[in-house]
Image 1 (cartoon, one colour):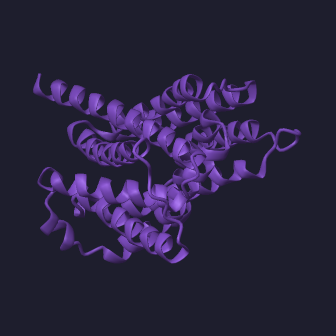
Image 2 (cartoon, rainbow, N blue to C red):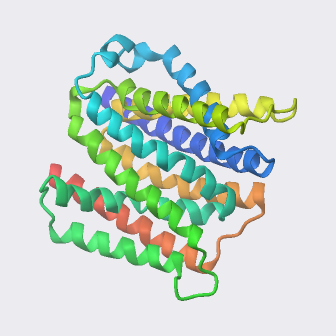
Length: 292
């Protein structure tokens, strides 16, 4: 009974965490449209989010154990990937339809499987190969490079998805050696430092007015809470239960895009997104069967 309750806790935390991330992405678009630079948006979110995370560090393994990590080189390399992908995501959300951006970002799961086979010599069975091919077909349908609607900026979420695959592979290589806190701490710290330096040197900082300032604070707190909830979700429930819940972000994206930005996903986005989601779930279910 306790196991079932823990799994339910994990599922609830994951749904809330992924939903909160969707809301912070929506706020990022609002900030960008108000004239704030991508780097100021990322800087504020990471600094406030990191402060929130440190307040709950004991629940995530403790700061002392995190600082004692023996994988600082891998953490640094992961942080480089994240420092490129997060600003790229913020920019993509500001110029592309919400649901379309999320759909393309979800190809990251296929890049992770592909890189696992290439870099770690993980066995690539036919199920994985078929899932990758089908997922990429879905991405091509969304991109529609043959149509007039193609926008080169659609490639930005694809690049972010590739970087997601790389940094996720690095996290997997660290295995159980790391605290849940360390997987977020080093990337958030480096992003906070680099974006602050960029904003200061470029003079990109704009003082938010009394209307926007509370939203910036709320967004940063939400980043911290979501970053806290997801490691706890994976602690309460196994990855093969929490993993499929990640695809609820597509539902969140459609909801947020429609009600906040009056966007309706077009047919290629719906068709391609459905294919990507099905292929991703196929990969997760295949991994679950293998682990039994």
